[in-house]
Length: 268
Image 1 (cartoon, rainbow, N blue to C red):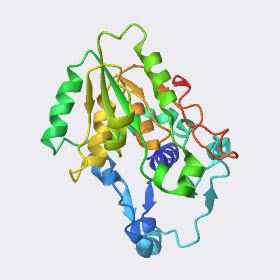
Image 2 (image 1 turned 90 degrees about the horizontal axis):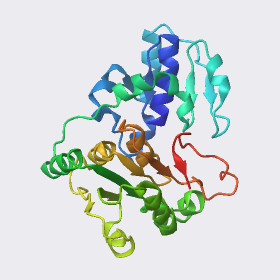
Image 3 (image 1 turned 90 degrees about the vertical axis):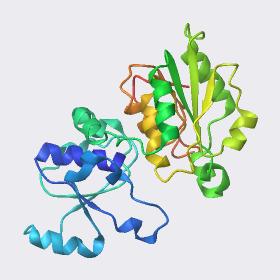
Image 4 (image 1 turned 135 degrees about the vertical axis):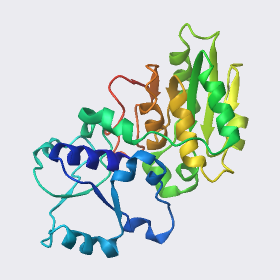
């Protein structure tokens, strides 16, 4: 989503068409899911084997220059791009698309729920006075040694402090909506402090990935993990609530200085 948003912003500024090379998804390890957003259909999703033919049809037979993201912080030189270019990188910073936020939010309008359980939870969130979406990311952050050393995980102390920040004078009305990829662990280790809580587990459903993010976006307040998944759930919310994000996004010593959180969010 960060890659799409950055490319979309550059294309919008140049009044150009955005093309996505999806050859990375060929190995089947991960699925491309942005086509779940109905408004993203203006983009042409090109597999690598067809990319050259597409360029030829566009009259772009000469190689397109590639701009590789030089570092994780905002790279201001992207503003000087004036012609066709191939962007390579993660581009995980809101500043790349802040000026076209309304365009990105329009592109990322979620489809209707195809899961009755998700729809029921959505109704409950919409009628809640003070809903708090909490994302506890584990999965490969715990199980894969390399990923764990690079990303790390948010501690329970972080979630304790975040709850205190969100609570303020809303304690009587707060309801927690907890998202995770390891509910067994969460139920045994996460303290809800007696707040009404819903464990949003729709993992069995084929559309769980974007339904989860959709449900996150419906919440008023957010406690996110060091994960782009919950970052987008909070950013797409538009509820003017409080967002608490981890101050350290990476465990890796070199990467610790980089954090994609929005300035208005509370980092702890």
